[in-house]
Amino acid sequence: MRVAFQGEVGAYSEQAAVSFFGAGIELLPLPDFRSIFEAVAQDRAHAAVVPIENSLAGSVHQNYDLLLEFRLPITGEIYLRIRHHLMALPGVRKQDIRRVISHPQALEQCREFLQQWPDIEIVPYYDTAGSAKRLREANLRDTAAIASHQAALEYDLNILASEIESDHQNFTRFLTIEKQENIPDEDGKTSIVFATKDIPGALFKSLAVFALRDINLQKLESRPLLGRPFQYLFYLDFEGSLRDEACRNALNHLGEITRFLQVLGSYRKGQFV
Image 1 (cartoon, rainbow, N blue to C red):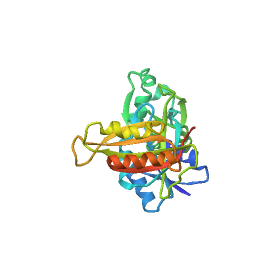
Image 2 (image 1 turned 120 degrees about the vertical axis):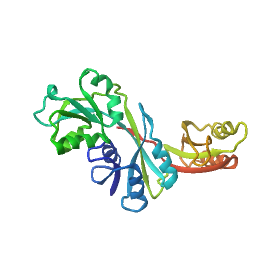
Image 3 (image 1 turned 60 degrees about the vertical axis):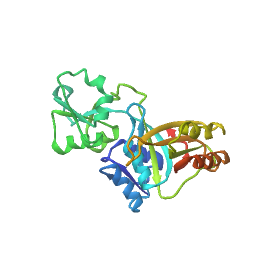
Image 4 (image 1 turned 90 degrees about the vertical axis):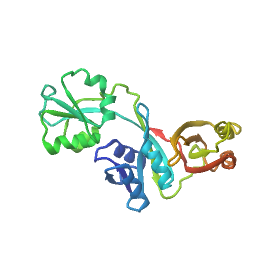
């Protein structure tokens, strides 16, 4: 099974893919999020793993838009604990370091650790694993990277400090996408997107179809509706599978009172790893 992910080998998305699908998969690293959706749509990958939200940094809005554009169903989710490590080439000591490179979110999540070095230059880079790869390829002996433990192994780097993130309750929720649905019989979760009619109380009435059936809502997020300034799509996650009669009835009701509704996926609730 070939699974696509965004980033270099050693990226957190790679860890999510292996944790979800198992160690026997073939991995396909790609440079950006659109590329991994295209890989599944064009049958160059059987599945892809995409980050959708981080417990500290919030939602990955581009991937919400790509889910709507490509209409590939969500088939699963996983919550990955993000552990950041400071790493450098073998033989490089902490006192040799003049700059630290990593993805901007990783740098921000390690801000308290980095503030201990007021003279260190902080350099944003496109990818955490990519920053580790950069150290190795350019033989940077005055630079450290912040990345995963797996990245340190992949690029033969020494870890100088472990778990340096400011908040250890740092999780990223990853979704899996495939061409075929994988609707569970139990322990399900469903993601949808809808647009309300331009009438008073439209959003309240939309959410009421779930409350009337005792369906628990887990997340609601709005995104701009392209081509219609200051109008919005609503992305919603709720507990339950499309095999549940109450969930199907709620969506049928919602379809009657909204002007657009799309199911993004119905899948088994994810585990924390």
